[in-house]
Length: 284
Image (tube, rainbow, N blue to C red):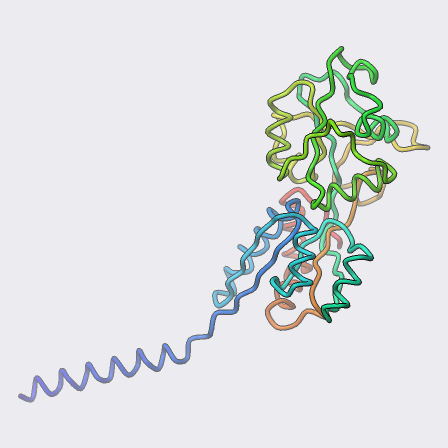
């Protein structure tokens, strides 16, 4: 009987300890990040590294495009919006109507890289040539020093921040050619270019770096430059590469709690090291 009583006492003690430990366990802190497809790989890398030392945090990262992320922030369905462009005036007004106060936080820089099939003879294009190609006024590679082959125009869809930035800064806000094929994600653009000798597309610097060998990167010559500039960390940071941009996080009001802790990590030396390792350009 004494042995049975001792066993029961030990069981009760262990159960009590387990219960106490369970009660003391930190609650899970969920953080949702939605938006730019260009930034998905970078933000996922940040999230993975952050959660290694913050086990109580569960970070969900999804794409869909900058416009989708901004809409989610306005509707209150994401904690952080990742955007490869600034908010439009219309979006700012929608946020105000929903009593949302977006705060813009630059977290990295990116170059928009023009890519073609590796066998394409063209090595560079001017900004004017790119505008004429994407507005449909140039439709054959022979018009820009390439083979006698029709140009297959590939683009992101209109909800993409990359689409908007490219239209504003390369096309001077002109409409894309009706012949442009709009694809839902950057990976689809890379795969399409790798498979078609006549294709051209624009993707983020990190995606171009990952696809090296399956695609060819073009130099870009802006007005006033003496020659084409290849996209890389140095040329994007200095502004010598014409098609470059900042990448942002948006929060509703100043970030706090888990969101602030995560963003502080992204901007820290460790976080900016991840920016460089994933093919983007640090802001600091």
